[in-house]
Length: 368
Image 1 (cartoon, rainbow, N blue to C red):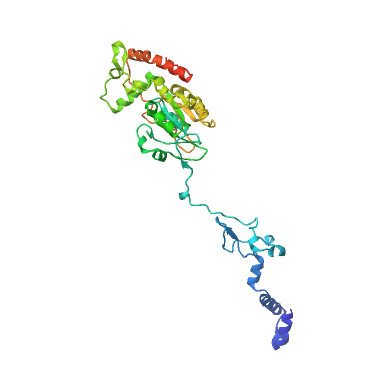
Image 2: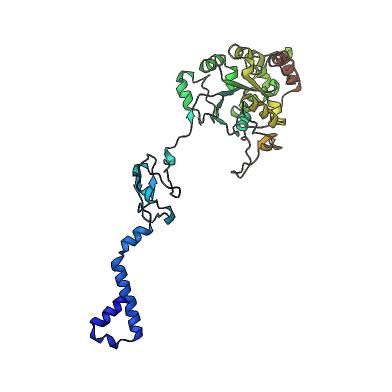
């Protein structure tokens, strides 16, 4: 109003203005005076953060300014005492968003490649692939997907080459591999003990007669002109003389092979899985194996169902998959029919070896 009175005295025609015009003019002049006394940048400065911007704490501890649109509430402004403190002593207030950038995912490498803590060393056609697929469900187990054959065929490549074949594992995880021919290779026990005497060994055993027939059936699919099973298994069938030089027969002499392993490893460090029970009760066999490896029993009967077509258990459908997980077509194939007399002769041949094996491991596998 002071501005309006001054205006009416200075201008001679001001007496002609109406009361409404004087009010409007008063508001306009008041606005001009306000703008002159309080500049816009001062108003914005007071309304915002005393620091004029938020700050982002980087991974290296440095700070940088970011856009001024990140504003703290007025009640977060420091008092006059706080404002007097050295800035080097200040910490981001609790309402400030602290963002520590993560490294790019492409540069992350989880875990390290380690030499195996446990090895499935045998036996061929005993169920080693099933054991590996079942145990690797456990989150604390990582395994090489293919047979490495390091200790029997590739030993001259060295341990670093062998280590390179292993998956990356965390400190809490077990590294495993599977090569069934290790159990019957004479040099393997010594070579594994030279790597580590603490290595845990797993042997999957099966009725040696059934195992031999399964072995022959697999070979026959690759070599159709193979001689008959009886011709390969016997030197003289009429006399019941078995040919132990044939690999399919020799593998089943478990007691002889185990003697070689016990020269380098105590029996307590070797775990035996029953190939028959792996089919009828996979959860129980996996429970015993998890105990042996020092793992929590996570793989249980809820993970399995029996596939009647294949004749052995499969893994139930994982949540992230659209179908159950069964072993490949080469597993569960129908065995070649063998003469009953030949089977009985082989059972007689294996009986003393089986009994000795039962005594050595302290368990009767009932292969009669």
